[in-house]
Length: 499
Ligand SMILES: [Zn+2]
Image (cartoon, rainbow, N blue to C red; front, side, top):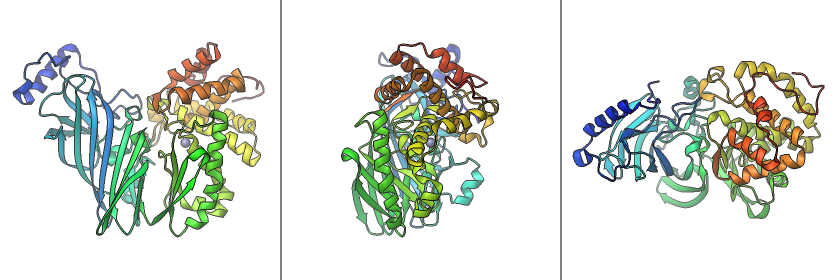
């Protein structure tokens, strides 16, 4: 892919700045005293080793709004993304992430902007260059087909396909790199912001998205619903759903609102399982992570015929059939429900700084899922961890270190780093830490982690530092040997375990 990821040298930067100025209108052709710093284009990515094109340099995102309007047959849509941002450098040009869709219009602060496309980047040249610290609003209107399941399979991007249509259903699965298939966005969790999502869909169907429903308006054959995420929402966690579903409302622990979007013809049979598991899983996590710490005021599930298992924020995507009474018991779906709920702390509230930090999402989710399974189904956490430990060296050889996996090891690469190292490797690392410092200190680390980085972005180094500070021990060498080693270290307190 043609990407402008390198940092220009000073001479190159000047040349680029000059080119940028020449290309723009003359209003600010010579830098005024307000133009702090040299004009440069923003970089195409934010320096993510695994996904170098995701996110965009040169600005901080303050808010994004997505306005999606679907055709009656759900086969096409128009998406307008409105991104409010602040320039972190003087910008001659900047990028958004976008692939697949057709661009119809780009404006910056209401004025038409020039744009071009390069690989999965949309390059936007504002009419007037942006000063450092200047706030601006970029709006991009695109049109695109909603791909069906067959077309999505051909993309060969695994579960990172963006939106998919399946009969009269639409669902969204972006993690880690699919959101810029939907609309032009800064598609990296480190650039998450509060968000407004507006969905206009046929009135005969229902629609839903992350956050709280704040407005509904009917206009003939179409209905528009607006959803607000006051918590910052990473693009990888977007959920946009349309289909013949019913939304059931329930009360969760201490006033948390629960909403389940369930296929209308299965709602009655699915709801009892969710009523049993969801409030209890929130209580279970709060017992360990602190009363009243659950990051959301509204939590829910979007169950569809196609489904998947994805922690889309405040509205986890699940397969409807796996929630039916018999399958729920046979498959142990409660453990999946708990896993996705734990992501509201790990991954959604505390988002990864870079994609190689994904072990902090999945490792935690697997770790707490194992505690839940032990309590609910009488399994042994030790047995589960020993099983993972036995597989460790083979998987580290294949995927690379837990906190530094190799992109090339993942098939398809769009799904990197979702593999053994993030899930089992991450859980094993947390278990090893718990073995080393004991349950009391481990809980103190975990509680500090979700408290200090709530609604924020944090990475591996932050976790290592925090663990050391909370326990008063230098845990750096220990944790690094787990996270960056090519071979699995000895498990504290388990001398009989062999990889
Ligand atoms: Zn997970």
